[in-house]
Length: 222
Image (tube, rainbow, N blue to C red; front, side):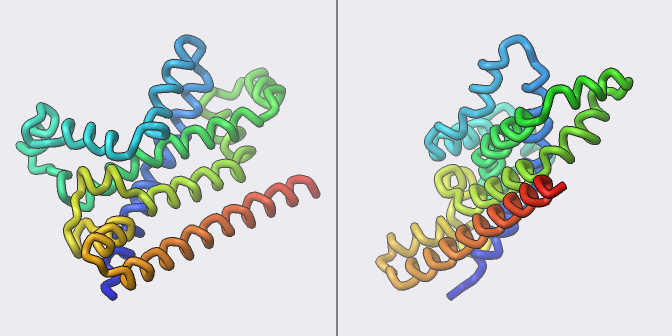
């Protein structure tokens, strides 16, 4: 059993989650401050959550293909994410971003508005309020968002196979390896990879529950 798909999946998930964390919380903060067209912006940012992943992958393929304007520009400067593990990272970011964004928005919405109002009265800037009050207060929710985004990136298939392809040892993730094994009629290998991803998913969710419940109990005790 070649464990390259596990390594590739973990590498893609870690890199994409790191990027998605910053994109998601800043988007949630920005949309929360927006008064005009908030519903429209929220719908656009959440769109990958309801779109079939293959559709998101197709759109990414059209944008970053060498025949596209932006893809052609990137190709001229030596960047080509198509059929590379970087393409897998790109797919994972797009698919997991709505999870990070919406969970972060939910966490920020639970903050007592009187705390923020008091901070403004004391002369704190909006960015200071965000970094010194909103993020620490919302930490359990943000941690849950990170864990869920990581899990979503680990299990991504549709967009990944569209833009990153299925190159063993290079872009083949666990989900793609399961698909490939079933296509080849190798059910034993497919079951092994299913067991791996099932175990990882269960551990991730357990860690999320332990962290969030522990944080809630500590805050309640305080």
